Length: 373
Image (cartoon, rainbow, N blue to C red; front, side, top):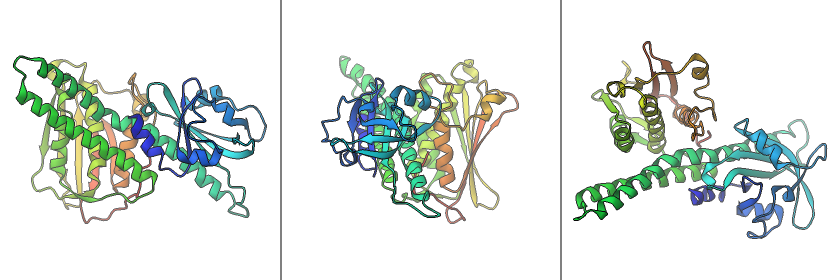
């Protein structure tokens, strides 16, 4: 996952630094060497305060501890600061910090540094700066999103690899089971690579790849992808897919991400239920005019109270000890980029139902060209 994050940050047009929990620099991209004047290896181990020496406006010392505290309270935090280059020059910069579990066990933050555009002037002089800050914040959030999205296929790869080791240790080895596991490892590796490639395309502002998507096949593939998690919690996942559904026009990898996120959340919700209540139902239908496809994913878990329900789609809001709280936020962004809607309802008895409505191929829609959680 570390190399995946670095491959994304290496292509962004801004200086990016990966910082460990003690405030030391553990990696920088090529753009950072141009902005700050250091060679690639020279900044390793330096404190962030060695590079960002003051907060612009009041000349107070730049504090990594203060940045970390502020970042812990929000999706990302932006500061206006003064950076010191290798030759001692001081430059005004915008600094955006975001959490990133993708950077490795020792790394906790991605810091994006963008020189301020002092040449901007006139009535619209602040527009270039605003766009810079928004782009820097987006890049930091993308790093956090990468950690969330790649986690599931990488976890599946590790689980299958460990199971394969056990099958190999049998006498004789369980070759048929091993063959199936290796097939799943290849599939999950391919999916992780596709997610990373999408992030790189987004970082370079490349257009999304849209194809005809068979919704029934999409849902069945997702159920297969999380089969091991389903078995692990002893749940049953059922699907009712209407015949003759119109195809969608979309990015199959991103739509797959949405359904995987929702299904994993549903499995988490029913995990502590009685065995007979650990059920998740997926219904896929078309609207009467065949212009839209509707997907409803219902769990029979305990549900959530009104306060938690109101924050379901807010980024970095999670009840999971190891969660980032990005899944639903990312999912809604993807669905909206496909011209659709994603919303949730509290069931009358218990549990939640998530609804996705997407335009069929040929229907009127507006698509975003890049992924922006």
